[in-house]
Image (cartoon, one colour):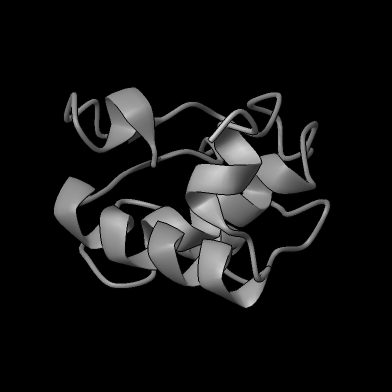
Length: 93
């Protein structure tokens, strides 16, 4: 799970905002960002921690995160959704 974010150690989550205090992406993008910072270090600006759609900040809604910690958080997301990983991702098995 996670591809480049976990196995490739690309540990930067691109901005979910326009750089002027407005969130432009949400949904699964934000859910995965939150999972990425759940257990490890991060650089998410404090203004964005509440998940508000608009904040009074020029800081980007982006973060650097810990890849191994993200693996654990992604496993929890999959287990909570009750997804059979092998069957759902590879229906021929």
